[in-house]
Amino acid sequence: MGANGERISRDTVTEDGIGARRLWTAVVVVAVNDWRNGTLRARRKAQEFLFENDKDFEMVCAGAGLEPGDFRTRLLKIGQRIEMQNRNVQPLAA
Image (cartoon, rainbow, N blue to C red; front, top):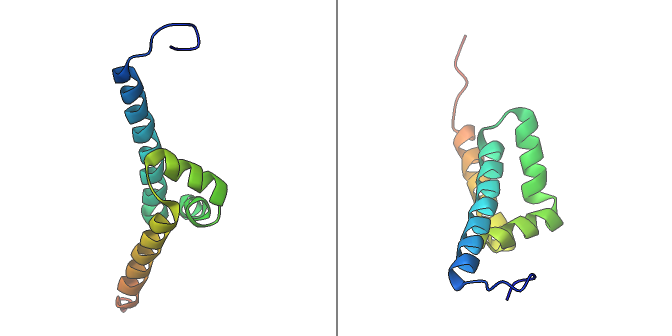
């Protein structure tokens, strides 16, 4: 029974849960996209969220169904790969 005495169906709870998970997943996707491709300001804010803001990051990961520590480790590996790729690029001569 719901708070007002109405009966809550299993389908409603499932749809609500799926909707919430999609919302939190979208938050994570936007943050990662900003971190990799955003403006300097967006990259800094995303990096702060992804690597320095434990409380909010853990809440968002929980909502998205992700394990925060594992996800951060994977993000760091992606970041290292990008950094390694950029090291191999030689500046063009003017």
